[in-house]
Image 1 (tube, helix red, strand yellow):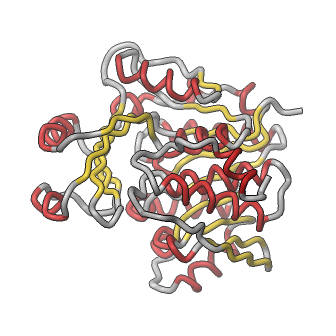
Image 2: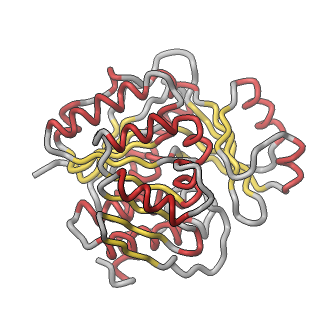
Image 3: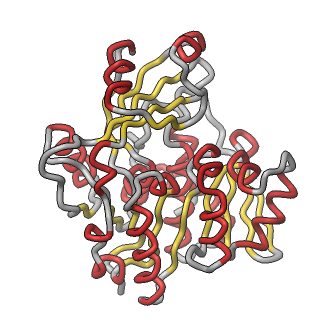
Length: 330
């Protein structure tokens, strides 16, 4: 039996989350709803201008690993932090959740990555990421034995931004398939898709990636169309299995000629959409690696996403397994 259900690979980032008005985004040249890559100087500038903030370990794939562990799954994580205060915070947080994390920290500069997240009154989050130590993640950080010991390897599209990380991802995908495992990927962000469209399409069409997780904006960006249905049909041809989230409209899962539509989980109040897609991926991939039906996978994803958007921060404060059991899903 494999030691892990899902091995998640991504940028190890500490999130710094603050509420802000729309005018703050405009005044500071922040693209709303996007992940904006910034340098160390701009990171210091924005940090100085932001209001009271909550610090939490984040990063897309790290959030997914945390969600899988909360559901009772066996999760592992690869990601690069520095040997500094924030790096220690990140490592402690993810290990305390039961996620196996053994990537060797970087000695010296650059420091651990951080992301300033501004949440507007509508719950939308605008992210400003200084990648820091993440740019040093490379093939040397890929642990072949962990890949072989995992049912599925999952990575984030954001890894295409640090130059050496994409080499590591291609190697991880090769090792996973060599060991008879599956590979999943999230498209991460529509601006990320615009940066790497051809490479992402090649990953799918070449079979390097088996499963795609994305939202409706990202797949429309991928196929450069305003039509969701046209993008969905193109995606159906390019990958074996995909789950596409559509905010309050729920999600659509496609596999071959099969289409499964899932309602969004009911919520009391939308607080912060940070981590919504990451937690949907956690629920979906947990269900998938447990052999559940696509409908159940989607419902688990919707449940996890619905819970995380009712709090500040990207990692669930509830015990997701208990919540899923109470909802009759486990």
